[in-house]
Amino acid sequence: MAGPQQETGGPRPTSRDVARAAGVSQATVSLVLGDKWRGRVAEPTAERVRTTARELGYRPNLAARNLRLGRTRTALLVVPALTNEFFAHVHTGAARVAARHGFGVVLYLSPDGAGPARDPFDSARASLDGVLASSMASHALAAIRGDDLPLVMLDSDPARSLGAATVNLDLADGMRRVTEHLLALGHRDFLHLAADIDSWTFDVRANALAAALSGTGAAVRRAAAPLTVEAARTAAEAALAAPGPRPTAVICDDDFLAAGVCKAARRLGLCVPEDLSVTGFDDLTLATAVEPELTTVRLPAEHFGERGMESLMAVVEGRAPDSTPLAVELVVRGSTGPAR
Figure 1 (cartoon, helix red, strand yellow):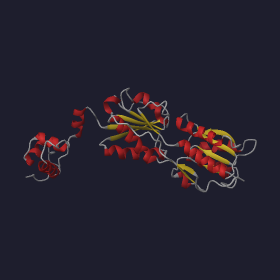
Figure 2: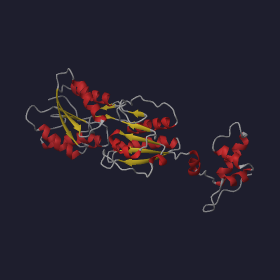
Figure 3: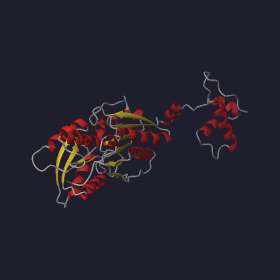
Figure 4: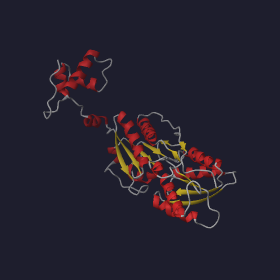
């Protein structure tokens, strides 16, 4: 018969205490609580051990167990700064899947948003079971991972990825959708406000835009800015005030850039969307905070993080991960209208 529940503040119960109270051996306790009892321990006995462990408040020493297994059950998530909420949602999804697998997630931010980073561990290979990394922070990996550490890349060129697997969003389809939406509204003179970051994810958007406009007779010029509202405002003001026909639509790589374009339009006396249509990418909270609200491409950030961690768990366990790109969605709001 099981003993009384462990008093708060008393000595922590051990597997020996559980064995004694349940009337079984410590080996039986280990088999049952390690979920390896089937075919070796009778079901009523297994249930008695579980009940006794609950009543005593027994918790296995996971650190010791993992040390015996040679694993820490810890994954590293490498992303740019969380000032961009997209990556906060990626972390939420990744952590949810990791928890289901009994893994913890260590979050490591590339300090400059997309640049080099120092090794956060004295010995990464001894501290981690795998790494999930955004291509926007890939420079950090040179200092972090050992050659044999499982790695899954997010937003990365599958043909040139550093990792054992890649998980991508269908960014090209998103850019195609937003471009076709503007073409259907009669726009033929475009400005592409691109992210001033050397990253595959933004190369995909630029290439998809060029492909979508090919053969349409439309003109497109390009400007670039860092991913901040003020930097985008400055770049957009200069581009929209430049000599020559003014664009009737601005396609932005990111919602922050689109918000900056809206500010630039107001400073130049232009109305959105009557004089200038503006589109974003990501569908961040910012997209519905501006007025008019942004037409943008919604990226399923939490699902993206979930798929990334599922792929890492598959690599760690020797299974083949799902490599199908995740679908995106065009969300039409008030920032786009017919060409003037």
